[in-house]
Every structure is written in structure tokens, then in C-alpha cells.
Length: 140
View 1 (tube, one colour):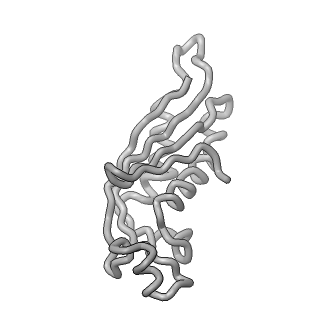
View 2 (cartoon, helix red, strand yellow):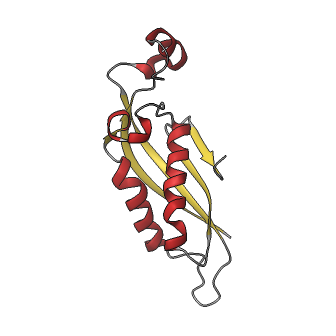
């Protein structure tokens, strides 16, 4: 069975590749390369997959998932400027694809400590806008 839980956080960023001239950044990222940046109200959906425990009737303890997501994601990214406050984005552009990959890695780091006997992290979905969402099922 797959269980999904949603979380919200706000963050700002400016899309730009440090190795490219500003003209290329403007062409590639359009208005998202505005020098003053812009922000999003992100919706993060975290999905876990595993068997239903015959004693508890649950796949996982949602309170434990909340603690993990708060520590690994929300405390790190909520109300932050991704370019300036997240070291991984000092050189890499903070696209939603890169943000989803970073969130995945941060969750995987502590997943086994929080859920040593399962379930497994199955998927995350990061919604940037109503029209744009990004999913990752495993790191490439």
C-alpha cells in the first residue's frame, strides 16, 4: 500500500546558472531569472510504500513522518532564499527539479533511522505552481 502526506513551505529563488552570462540566463529562464528573485508556495507530497502492519493496521506512523519531514525539509527550506541560504544552490540553479532531488536525498539520509523496518520512501512530488509539478521516485 502507498501512503502519501502533504506539506507546505514557502521559499524564494532566482533561476540562473552561475557559469552562464546574464543574457543566456535571461533567455533560458525568462522572468524567473529576475535579479531580485521570486517566490513560491510549494506543496510537497511524500509517499511511502509497504505492507499494512497486522497489529496497527497502518503502513507507517504519520507522526514520525511529520518529524522527519519537518527536520529534513521544512526547517531547512521554509521562508528561505534558496540561492543565498542553501549551500547546494550556491553554484547549481535552484530549479524545482534540483530542489526535488535535494529533498529526496535529505529524506533518504534519515529514512532508515526513522523507519528501520520499512516502509520505503516511494515518491515525492513537489508542486511549484498549480501548473508545474515535479516527481521523483528514486535518485538517478
